[in-house]
Image 1 (cartoon, rainbow, N blue to C red):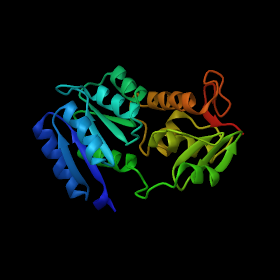
Image 2 (image 1 turned 90 degrees about the vertical axis):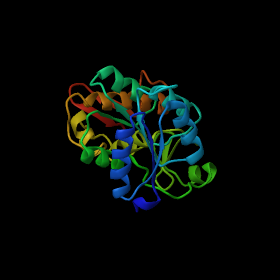
Image 3 (image 1 turned 90 degrees about the horizontal axis):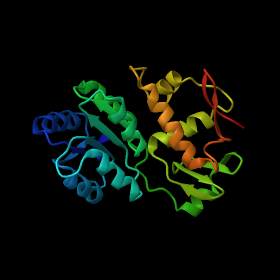
Image 4 (image 1 turned 60 degrees about the horizontal axis):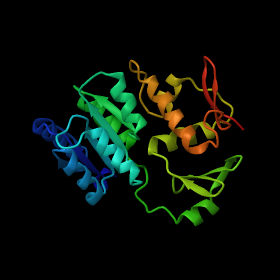
Length: 236
């Protein structure tokens, strides 16, 4: 299955690129590489990869700016930020600008491969046209509907741009209405890996980004609600 999936590696340290390329190709992925931010951005646009491994500290343009530019262009390719620093601010900033995930150097190759697998798009097919997808989307609550075939979400019939992770979080909560999940539950169920250090902040940031996209008034949400001290749930 992975043979058709391409991972773009944007990293200025050649030895790290070589290790990543070797291990990803061994897992059946195709790879392409860029050694600075500008080349990374143009490679992301021209080669349309299925996932991007994106270093933060890059020549010419840093990883945050590359990710921000891609998201501004409406490109929702899954992005995993590679950061050399264990700084909470780096992780949160990466997620704020639309990255799907992050991994801190030095990382174990096994963990990185697992996260690539967990983040890569499940669908290789071309989604149907938005109007057709909207017509066949299942209403979940109020004017919110989800088409699970095309991985698209609609509010009042209009498509909403979500990252893969935002989509998965929404569909998971919506498929278990009114059930409260703790942050650790969600890390395990949606992110597919167990609780690691302060990673639960990832859940909070992703929920906030999701609310900004699906709620009419994100400060007073009606879909994804917080049960204080317990976690999040999808209200119906």
